[in-house]
Image (cartoon, rainbow, N blue to C red; front, side):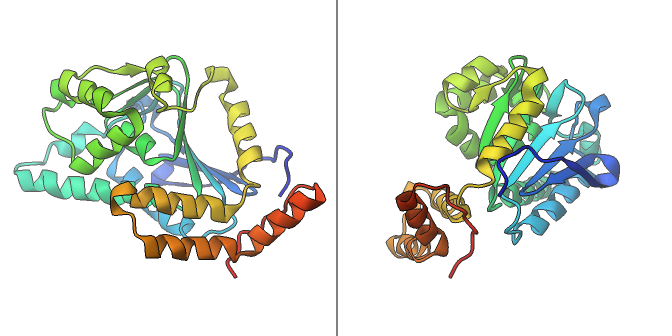
Length: 274
């Protein structure tokens, strides 16, 4: 694949224009587009994300998926609170959280490398989506948290809490939830929750550079590594891991990698399993 910057091409929007899409070879970018509401998620946006992730699961040509917020003030400031107005029983909340888990499982289960580009507020549902991505980059003005203790007074599903622990660590997750404080980009970077702090006016160039360097990488390395990470150390299955290794070492990409290294040339990975 080309290592030169490609032209992004706008695609039909989803969720009535609340999810903007554009593509270039090997990459898809999704922009949450409700700037007047700090990109707070609606039911239509969640439906759009479900449809998008379903379309990408078997897409072997797309290697990178980028998520970002429009408007320059927020990645996403949680969920649209008006959607909670009709909740009259706890069962409504349980059903809602099950729906959110479905969306986040779709995001985290994507075979592509996913990047959350955070510029501004990244709280509540927005943080859940960012945490479901493989990697995060943030501007200096970005803030992260789950301030529900001073806003809605609800609780998160355990899967969201555990995922936040994986990304930010236990102490910061406790601070976010038990004190309702927001964490700045510097602290997020210090604990490895974001891979880089980038100035806002440099984000487009950063994304282009990320796509250029990531798209050509071996697809199987990414897919199989994400499978191992999803399994986690406490659910390690030797037979399952041997099966993954058999795929990797038996692949055309591995043979191409060895051949290219010995010939002192750049490999041309195809991503097929044979």
